[in-house]
Length: 475
Image (cartoon, rainbow, N blue to C red; front, side, top):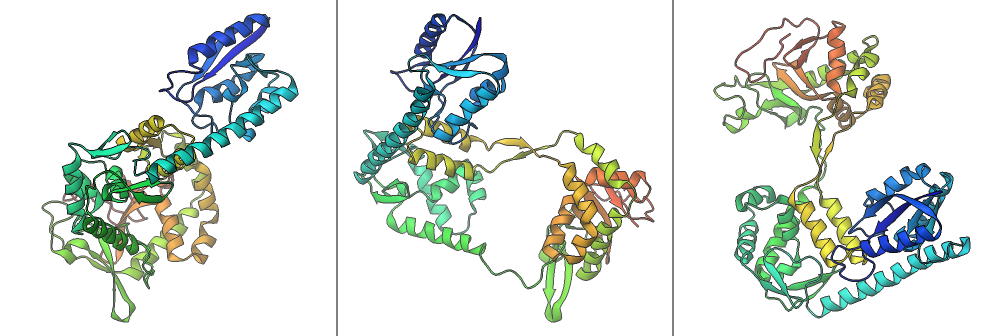
């Protein structure tokens, strides 16, 4: 008896009529009885569009393809349930064929020509529908209606935005940001908003009384929360702050920027360039007169020559490559679980907006996914690749000799997150996840000395200074 699995997909959860999951299941089971097969399972992708060129948002389809060797037929209501993109559609058919399985439709012809035509027609219908939806949304925007997700501060009434109880909060956000005294992160914390939500809000012309569709703006019928003068001042601040990232590169390229830490008080050290190209790293407490390091610790005005400590750091990287069997010892420790890192959802939000503009998402689906992304940025494990470690160690000497300081800094950051700097010398290093097994292996070979998570070069005397939050190793 033929082994049959069902694949059921509904595009939108708010779809009240049409091909529901239950209707698809009933029709597919009737078809399974006609071909005298046994249904051994089903895969369901609910509230999922197939108008994409990949399967990243369809876990059940990916699982169905992975299980293809455990059944003979993947039965669908009609072939457009598989995909609405020709490349993806025919790739699914080829994947099933390689696994000695096949796809069949409960309502369409299952001849090879009919199956091929169904996939092409489904893709063409999706393109026509997408263009039609894009035209409908553009027409609504020209009429002054809010298109897409309703922004914070408005409710949608017959397509027109009506200010709600959150409108005063939006007005306050605009007034404060327009002063130029608030960063997005600090203002979001002050108002109890999500940082990414506020960042998106400050670029949204809807608050200035416009309707927006596919990057074009039209006069809106809804009342503006930000008047024209406030909107202009907000955008002036945005342009000014974006322009800061496009300034010319500094004349000097300090190696230890963002890595140097004062060994006297534990505060960050800042690179300073003076007349005659004299470069130094200075403790930040020395520069601003405030206590930014370890509480209760008085800095002894730690100022060091930049060239001396940078040269020590470069020689330290090269010395690591000379430790025998260091790569093999370190790579074995990289199999431990990696810590999680938070992902900035900005790019995902842009892709979601493009998919919505192309007609691939309904209003409800777009609002739901956007709300989820803004609620809390996603978390994924930070991968640790032992191949990166081996490649760095194998080529570190020629890389360091030929690299600029910017390129050397990338290599250094792969190994350490902090460089503790004393009077014209490096006291200790705090390793990254890649660097921890590397320096641990060096410590095991007695090339380096370990104390409380920090590492120092040969000759360390294991001295602990209890003033510090984290004990350090002194040479």
